[in-house]
Image 1 (tube, rainbow, N blue to C red):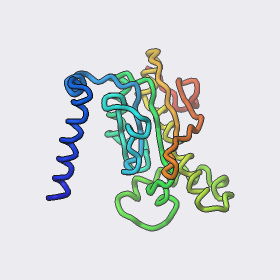
Image 2: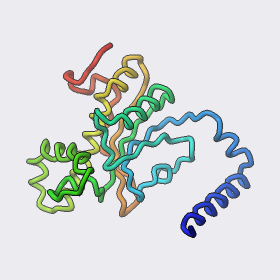
Image 3: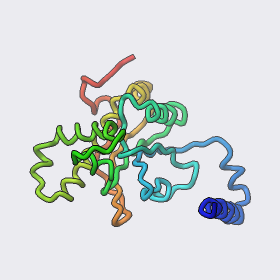
Image 4: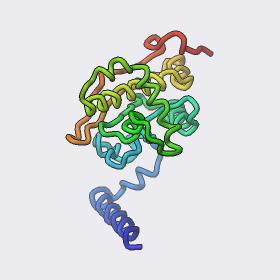
Amino acid sequence: MEQLEKLFQNNSEWVKKKTAHDPEYFTRLSGEQHPEYLWFGCADSRVPANAVVGLEPGELFVHRNIANVCQPTDMSALSVLEFAVGVLKVKHVIVCGHYGCGGVKAAMGNQQIGLIDNWIRSIRDVYLAHKQELDAIADENERFDRLVELNVLQQVRNISHTSILQKAWEQDQSVWIHGWVYDLKTGMIKDLNCCISGPFEIDSVYRVTS
């Protein structure tokens, strides 16, 4: 198919460009990876993780799903988190949501969509937890943006509550969890000034010890 052939052509041109600038680029890249960052983001095609932060392949470990949600029963997310923190020893876990997120928007409504209704239920829980604040925002777009931010903050907490992070902290491994939001309209990242770096920053009910 023509559309797929274009992708192969793009790949070939990308390889030529990279090797022309650096003949050893792929030889070096095929070695072990040592990223310092785990990007926990949304699957939205408009938010290309490496491009947004200007990092090359090998510099950013990435996990993406609908609305950047980390649920305690999501084996895929937890497996990525365990490998990134336990094996790769990343120093920073970045939860990055984005304004205009379709998953968050769907969670604000009542229309039945399908399987994803079960996935975004946790975002509805976030809305319920902050209902007074959100309902006080008259402008729907501003309310939408705020729920995007609150969802990111909740996922930062969810990650900090995992035994994976708490085990790393117990072993004196330095790992910071950050909450960011990407603005599709400007291309800029907003730091929500939420950073958790140890068990002392989470509620005692979520702390686990070995």
